[in-house]
Image 1 (cartoon, helix red, strand yellow):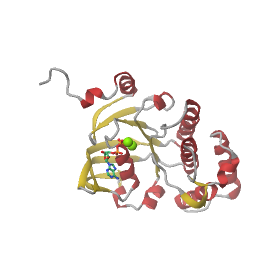
Image 2 (cartoon, rainbow, N blue to C red):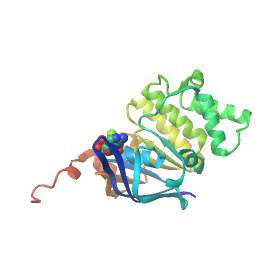
Image 3 (cartoon, rainbow, N blue to C red):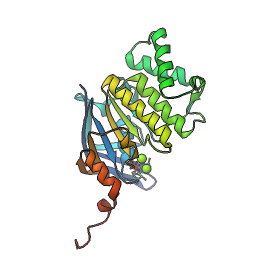
Image 4 (cartoon, protein in one colour):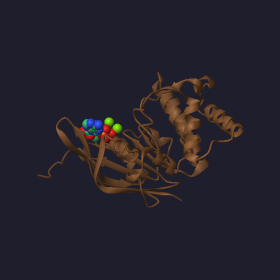
Length: 255
Ligand code: ADP
Ligand code: MG
Ligand code: MG
């Protein structure tokens, strides 16, 4: 069992106008085996949370903490976070010119496990994971994210997820830009990885659509850099029908 604890997190970003606080008091606990959906309107700070967990240098934690099994994540380098069992799939993944998918995956796996995977099982595992995600074998020889379509980027992320078997995975808008068929394939991949390795999932999404395929145990609504409401799957159903308006506008007659 692993537990990621985010406590009263305050995060600023440096812009031309100085320091702006984006997250102001985010508190969240995720355990292996649990799926948490983070939902909220655009600009509410969802990606900022993901980047902060990932250790992106643009985001400064001014107070609060993030720990994984009691270890201070904020003290860890990006590599150390991955080795500790955190996996981050970003909304806008970067290109890695000159590095093929297959080499990238093998290097990442070796770094995380502290030893290279056995060639025989590894090749088999990669082939199977790619077939499960309906990916062409040629994809393995392409450079990471170079010219990938939106759907290919997402499949590549889920391929990493299935092969690297993290303790806790943060998926930022994995559903964005996917048609229904691709969404199903990607969701099945997440569900397979969950069933395989009992990982915890932090699923960041603006829309409820993906939650029809990946069922959350907990739903958290983020507005203005903090969680304003929490509940079970029924909260997602409510957001589906009502949207985020009631969090953004004062209730009628409240003045
Ligand atoms: P979400 O993912 O919920 O749409 P973001 O975390 O991307 O929200 O952004 C939250 C707020 O922080 C927005 O107002 C956004 O403009 C601002 N912000 C986030 N990252 C940066 C950045 N690197 N530079 C400047 N502003 C940023
Ligand atoms: Mg956004
Ligand atoms: Mg975002």
